[in-house]
Image 1 (cartoon, rainbow, N blue to C red):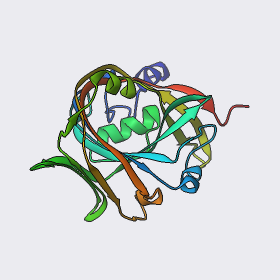
Image 2 (cartoon, rainbow, N blue to C red):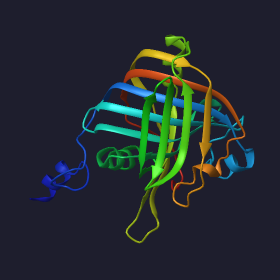
Image 3 (cartoon, one colour):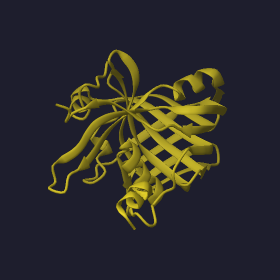
Length: 246
Protein backbone atom coordinates (compact mmCIF):
# COMPACT_ATOMS: atom_id res chain seq x y z
CA UNK A 1 0.00 0.00 0.00
CA UNK A 2 1.61 3.28 -1.08
CA UNK A 3 1.22 6.63 0.69
CA UNK A 4 -1.56 7.87 -1.61
CA UNK A 5 -3.52 4.67 -1.00
CA UNK A 6 -3.14 5.13 2.75
CA UNK A 7 -4.48 8.68 2.50
CA UNK A 8 -7.39 7.65 0.27
CA UNK A 9 -8.45 4.93 2.71
CA UNK A 10 -7.78 6.81 5.94
CA UNK A 11 -11.39 7.44 6.92
CA UNK A 12 -11.42 5.97 10.43
CA UNK A 13 -9.57 3.60 12.76
CA UNK A 14 -8.48 0.91 12.14
CA UNK A 15 -7.37 1.49 8.55
CA UNK A 16 -8.28 -1.91 7.09
CA UNK A 17 -11.50 -2.41 9.09
CA UNK A 18 -13.03 0.89 10.29
CA UNK A 19 -15.28 0.76 13.33
CA UNK A 20 -18.02 2.59 11.39
CA UNK A 21 -18.85 3.36 7.73
CA UNK A 22 -18.95 6.78 6.04
CA UNK A 23 -22.18 8.76 6.39
CA UNK A 24 -24.75 10.13 5.96
CA UNK A 25 -26.21 8.71 9.15
CA UNK A 26 -29.99 8.33 9.02
CA UNK A 27 -32.06 7.41 12.09
CA UNK A 28 -35.51 5.85 11.74
CA UNK A 29 -37.96 5.79 14.67
CA UNK A 30 -35.46 7.56 16.89
CA UNK A 31 -37.13 7.93 20.29
CA UNK A 32 -36.27 10.68 22.78
CA UNK A 33 -37.20 10.89 26.46
CA UNK A 34 -36.06 14.30 27.73
CA UNK A 35 -36.43 15.67 31.25
CA UNK A 36 -35.57 19.34 31.65
CA UNK A 37 -34.52 20.32 35.16
CA UNK A 38 -33.14 23.27 37.07
CA UNK A 39 -29.62 22.81 38.44
CA UNK A 40 -26.87 24.63 40.33
CA UNK A 41 -25.49 27.65 38.38
CA UNK A 42 -22.01 27.23 39.88
CA UNK A 43 -21.93 23.58 38.84
CA UNK A 44 -22.86 24.58 35.28
CA UNK A 45 -20.17 27.27 35.15
CA UNK A 46 -17.62 24.61 36.08
CA UNK A 47 -18.39 22.40 33.05
CA UNK A 48 -19.50 24.68 30.19
CA UNK A 49 -16.49 25.58 28.01
CA UNK A 50 -16.11 29.21 26.95
CA UNK A 51 -17.03 30.82 24.60
CA UNK A 52 -20.32 28.95 25.18
CA UNK A 53 -22.55 30.61 27.80
CA UNK A 54 -25.77 29.84 29.63
CA UNK A 55 -28.52 32.20 30.70
CA UNK A 56 -30.68 29.92 32.83
CA UNK A 57 -29.35 27.07 35.00
CA UNK A 58 -31.14 24.33 33.06
CA UNK A 59 -30.09 20.82 32.05
CA UNK A 60 -31.81 18.33 29.75
CA UNK A 61 -31.37 14.73 30.81
CA UNK A 62 -31.96 12.45 27.81
CA UNK A 63 -32.61 8.82 27.03
CA UNK A 64 -32.55 8.01 23.30
CA UNK A 65 -33.52 4.74 21.60
CA UNK A 66 -32.09 4.24 18.14
CA UNK A 67 -33.43 0.95 16.76
CA UNK A 68 -32.52 1.65 13.11
CA UNK A 69 -29.50 3.81 12.35
CA UNK A 70 -27.26 3.75 9.26
CA UNK A 71 -23.98 2.00 10.04
CA UNK A 72 -24.46 2.18 13.80
CA UNK A 73 -27.25 -0.39 14.09
CA UNK A 74 -29.53 -0.69 17.13
CA UNK A 75 -28.50 0.98 20.38
CA UNK A 76 -29.55 3.17 23.31
CA UNK A 77 -27.96 6.34 24.67
CA UNK A 78 -28.33 8.49 27.77
CA UNK A 79 -26.77 11.70 29.02
CA UNK A 80 -26.93 15.43 29.67
CA UNK A 81 -27.37 18.34 27.27
CA UNK A 82 -27.16 21.94 28.47
CA UNK A 83 -29.01 24.87 26.83
CA UNK A 84 -26.38 27.47 25.90
CA UNK A 85 -25.72 30.32 23.51
CA UNK A 86 -22.85 30.93 21.09
CA UNK A 87 -22.29 34.45 19.77
CA UNK A 88 -25.74 35.35 21.04
CA UNK A 89 -27.56 32.48 19.28
CA UNK A 90 -29.28 29.76 21.37
CA UNK A 91 -28.32 26.11 21.06
CA UNK A 92 -27.38 23.08 23.14
CA UNK A 93 -24.06 21.83 24.51
CA UNK A 94 -23.71 18.05 24.69
CA UNK A 95 -22.05 17.54 28.07
CA UNK A 96 -22.05 13.75 28.58
CA UNK A 97 -23.38 10.68 26.76
CA UNK A 98 -23.37 7.01 27.77
CA UNK A 99 -24.26 4.22 25.35
CA UNK A 100 -24.06 0.49 24.74
CA UNK A 101 -22.58 0.04 21.24
CA UNK A 102 -19.02 0.42 19.87
CA UNK A 103 -19.59 1.91 16.36
CA UNK A 104 -21.49 5.00 17.55
CA UNK A 105 -19.01 5.47 20.40
CA UNK A 106 -16.07 5.39 17.98
CA UNK A 107 -17.83 7.36 15.24
CA UNK A 108 -19.25 9.93 17.62
CA UNK A 109 -15.90 10.64 19.24
CA UNK A 110 -13.76 10.55 16.09
CA UNK A 111 -16.01 12.51 13.69
CA UNK A 112 -17.87 15.04 15.82
CA UNK A 113 -16.29 14.91 19.27
CA UNK A 114 -19.31 13.51 21.11
CA UNK A 115 -18.39 12.83 24.78
CA UNK A 116 -19.42 9.16 24.60
CA UNK A 117 -18.57 6.41 27.10
CA UNK A 118 -19.60 2.76 27.36
CA UNK A 119 -22.47 2.02 29.75
CA UNK A 120 -25.88 0.29 29.90
CA UNK A 121 -28.88 2.59 29.29
CA UNK A 122 -32.42 1.38 28.63
CA UNK A 123 -35.61 3.12 27.53
CA UNK A 124 -38.79 1.11 27.88
CA UNK A 125 -42.49 1.24 28.80
CA UNK A 126 -43.70 -0.31 32.04
CA UNK A 127 -47.50 -0.37 31.99
CA UNK A 128 -48.48 3.34 32.01
CA UNK A 129 -44.98 4.73 32.57
CA UNK A 130 -42.11 5.63 30.26
CA UNK A 131 -38.94 4.50 32.04
CA UNK A 132 -35.28 5.34 31.44
CA UNK A 133 -32.48 3.73 33.45
CA UNK A 134 -28.73 4.24 33.08
CA UNK A 135 -26.32 1.80 34.73
CA UNK A 136 -22.54 1.61 34.86
CA UNK A 137 -21.89 -2.05 35.48
CA UNK A 138 -24.39 -3.15 38.10
CA UNK A 139 -24.84 0.31 39.64
CA UNK A 140 -27.67 2.73 38.80
CA UNK A 141 -26.54 6.17 37.66
CA UNK A 142 -29.85 7.74 36.52
CA UNK A 143 -33.52 6.76 36.79
CA UNK A 144 -36.21 8.73 34.93
CA UNK A 145 -39.97 8.20 34.72
CA UNK A 146 -42.81 9.94 32.88
CA UNK A 147 -46.51 9.38 32.43
CA UNK A 148 -46.95 7.74 29.02
CA UNK A 149 -48.38 10.03 26.32
CA UNK A 150 -50.49 12.19 28.64
CA UNK A 151 -50.71 15.26 26.36
CA UNK A 152 -49.81 15.68 22.70
CA UNK A 153 -47.39 18.42 21.71
CA UNK A 154 -47.13 20.45 18.51
CA UNK A 155 -45.20 18.47 15.91
CA UNK A 156 -44.07 21.67 14.21
CA UNK A 157 -42.62 23.20 17.38
CA UNK A 158 -41.00 19.90 18.30
CA UNK A 159 -39.37 19.72 14.88
CA UNK A 160 -38.05 23.27 15.30
CA UNK A 161 -36.51 22.36 18.66
CA UNK A 162 -34.74 19.33 17.15
CA UNK A 163 -33.38 21.50 14.33
CA UNK A 164 -31.63 24.00 16.62
CA UNK A 165 -27.79 24.05 16.68
CA UNK A 166 -25.82 21.70 18.91
CA UNK A 167 -22.28 22.17 20.20
CA UNK A 168 -19.50 19.75 21.16
CA UNK A 169 -16.02 20.10 22.62
CA UNK A 170 -13.84 17.88 20.40
CA UNK A 171 -10.51 16.81 21.92
CA UNK A 172 -7.95 14.57 20.20
CA UNK A 173 -4.54 14.25 21.87
CA UNK A 174 -1.14 14.28 20.22
CA UNK A 175 1.19 11.29 20.71
CA UNK A 176 2.87 13.12 23.59
CA UNK A 177 -0.45 13.54 25.39
CA UNK A 178 -0.89 17.24 24.65
CA UNK A 179 -4.02 18.33 22.74
CA UNK A 180 -3.61 18.17 18.95
CA UNK A 181 -7.26 19.09 18.31
CA UNK A 182 -9.25 21.17 20.78
CA UNK A 183 -12.23 22.92 19.23
CA UNK A 184 -15.93 23.69 19.47
CA UNK A 185 -17.90 21.83 16.81
CA UNK A 186 -21.43 22.78 15.74
CA UNK A 187 -23.79 20.28 14.15
CA UNK A 188 -27.46 20.07 13.21
CA UNK A 189 -30.07 17.36 12.94
CA UNK A 190 -31.46 17.44 9.39
CA UNK A 191 -34.35 16.08 7.30
CA UNK A 192 -36.47 15.78 10.44
CA UNK A 193 -39.86 14.06 10.47
CA UNK A 194 -41.56 14.13 13.87
CA UNK A 195 -44.00 11.23 14.12
CA UNK A 196 -45.27 12.00 17.59
CA UNK A 197 -44.54 14.19 20.63
CA UNK A 198 -46.05 14.14 24.10
CA UNK A 199 -45.56 15.55 27.58
CA UNK A 200 -46.52 14.30 31.01
CA UNK A 201 -45.57 14.29 34.70
CA UNK A 202 -41.90 13.40 35.09
CA UNK A 203 -39.34 12.54 37.75
CA UNK A 204 -35.56 12.15 37.68
CA UNK A 205 -33.07 10.78 40.20
CA UNK A 206 -29.29 10.92 39.70
CA UNK A 207 -26.75 8.85 41.62
CA UNK A 208 -23.11 9.68 42.28
CA UNK A 209 -20.61 7.60 40.35
CA UNK A 210 -16.89 8.37 40.03
CA UNK A 211 -16.77 7.59 36.29
CA UNK A 212 -20.24 8.80 35.32
CA UNK A 213 -20.60 12.07 37.25
CA UNK A 214 -24.07 13.05 36.05
CA UNK A 215 -25.05 13.88 39.64
CA UNK A 216 -22.48 16.70 39.69
CA UNK A 217 -25.25 18.68 37.93
CA UNK A 218 -27.84 18.13 40.66
CA UNK A 219 -31.60 18.05 40.15
CA UNK A 220 -33.09 21.00 42.03
CA UNK A 221 -36.46 21.11 40.23
CA UNK A 222 -37.96 19.11 37.37
CA UNK A 223 -39.38 21.51 34.77
CA UNK A 224 -40.83 19.18 32.12
CA UNK A 225 -40.86 15.72 30.61
CA UNK A 226 -41.10 15.16 26.84
CA UNK A 227 -41.35 12.02 24.70
CA UNK A 228 -40.60 12.25 20.94
CA UNK A 229 -40.55 9.74 18.07
CA UNK A 230 -38.88 10.94 14.87
CA UNK A 231 -36.82 10.20 11.79
CA UNK A 232 -33.76 12.37 11.20
CA UNK A 233 -30.30 12.59 9.71
CA UNK A 234 -27.33 13.46 11.90
CA UNK A 235 -25.45 16.14 9.99
CA UNK A 236 -21.67 16.38 10.01
CA UNK A 237 -20.07 19.20 11.93
CA UNK A 238 -18.44 22.59 11.43
CA UNK A 239 -15.62 23.98 13.56
CA UNK A 240 -16.77 27.28 15.04
CA UNK A 241 -13.99 27.87 17.59
CA UNK A 242 -10.41 26.54 17.64
CA UNK A 243 -8.68 26.81 21.01
CA UNK A 244 -5.26 26.07 19.47
CA UNK A 245 -5.44 28.54 16.56
CA UNK A 246 -2.64 31.11 16.61
